Length: 139
Length: 188
Image 1 (tube, one colour):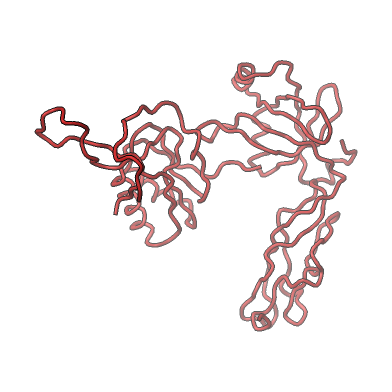
Image 2: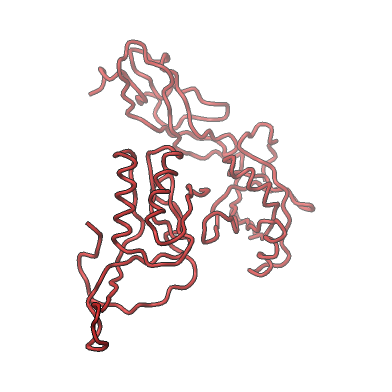
């Protein structure tokens, strides 16, 4: 089941502009390895769910997956063959905003070689270029 | 600054540093392009000093797990410091800046370190470890990352905190009669 917010204050949002790099959520915080985005993009709830399923099927219940992004932005789309106007369309899908540096997924409790293979499968489901990262230096 | 020699302080690494005469993002960027790593030293009633050091040398020590350093300057006393904070770029792989805080290597500090039981406790099928960490007091220069206790040091199937062998200069703070590990049949 793709993720979406439980409650909403407003049903529709403006599209917005994504600039710059990730300044939050840009390091591996919960797991041992992470998948980091190198591009700016919306990642839909279906893509996130697809990546999660691909990873879990590959790992066969080993380890733990952390999903670090949440699709909280409603993206509206007019139906096909509809005349322009008549107000803003209904929500088509939910998306997470991803900037360069954002950690998309994390893994814990699996070996590095296995984590790399699992992350490669997750990266294939993402609309952005990704790279495999580990935990960074800690004081 | 402590007068202890580094030979007896396995956790301390020497690094050459230079005082920065100009500070600010522009000059820090120029330093990074020249292979230097900007840093700052503060704490212990001393002045805040902006410094820079060789990036490769610093990264070599940091990647090996060292966090306590003796910074030596061309003209000035060396300073014992430990890493307080790292600052990374947005991709998390490029170290931009280090915060060092001054430490006194003669002063003992309390810290909890993990204890690992090596080998088997005689007569025990399974081992219960109620205490994963014990508190010790030691100088940062000799502070161990972890401690080991031999399973055959158990008396009546029980390993006490006092049985953990500590390196020189390390004192036990946890009660010596506390049970670190025991035969599971004794547990409960």
